[in-house]
Image 1: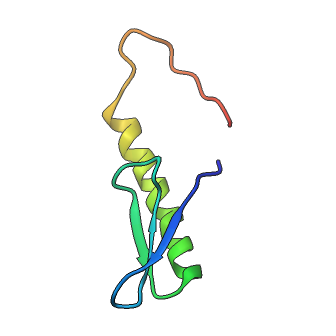
Image 2: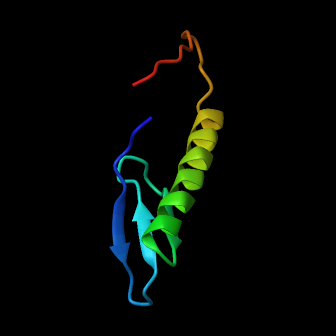
Length: 66
């Protein structure tokens, strides 16, 4: 899966990573590389939480790769 990640440097010098398509999916790091590695973990956690919050009701659950 490929997602867009917004990187910004905060006032303390940390690199903040945010996934605009995933509300609340944020992380940070001391460097750009660290922030990118940390946001990968955050994306995995975000996806797990969202999947557990919305179990299928009457439909069929299918997996697609985009």
